[in-house]
Length: 214
Ligand code: TZP
Ligand code: MG
Image 1 (cartoon, protein in one colour):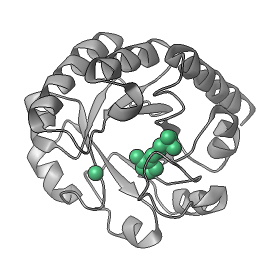
Image 2: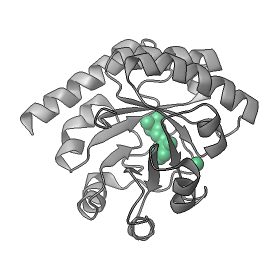
Image 3: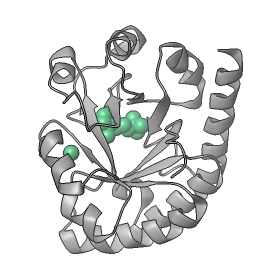
Image 4: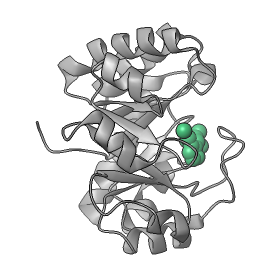
């Protein structure tokens, strides 16, 4: 498998994308225009909808070489043969998820403070999602914004790749990469934008520019 590229990580939101097919369309446009990883996140869905959409996403993203990561639903990830699972603090513990998914799939964990960071297992986790960095309307229970300084302190305290999340727009890419993160995860900066392809391309350009000047 090619090296994991977390630089532009799209997290899909069913409300912002309009429909399951809208999600697949958004994911495809994003992946064709610079998104390097895609997560399916649909907290209110029934299993059947999860699985059907995960399979469509996998079919759309695999040919583009973009990994599909499933939020929380380990069984869906296995049934759809997704590339990985992302768990939050209220989901199954990372060590249990690793046992369930085996050694080859990706595993990401959400972290928002030092105590959550300390609880991350020493092995078996591939990356951390850290946030919210900025205030976000997309996840009402996301907690207080860390700011760039708070993000930087957490990123400096772990050897794992960190993906920043929460309120991120292309204008933030430079300061986020300078804070030591490997990539940015976005929902509303791509989902629900009038032109998700153009929005993705603009983020990819901002990241490439930030990397060049870093
Ligand atoms: N986890 C922490 S903040 C967040 C998630 C899923 C939502 C980020 O959404 P947006 O629209 O990019 O601010
Ligand atoms: Mg979750």
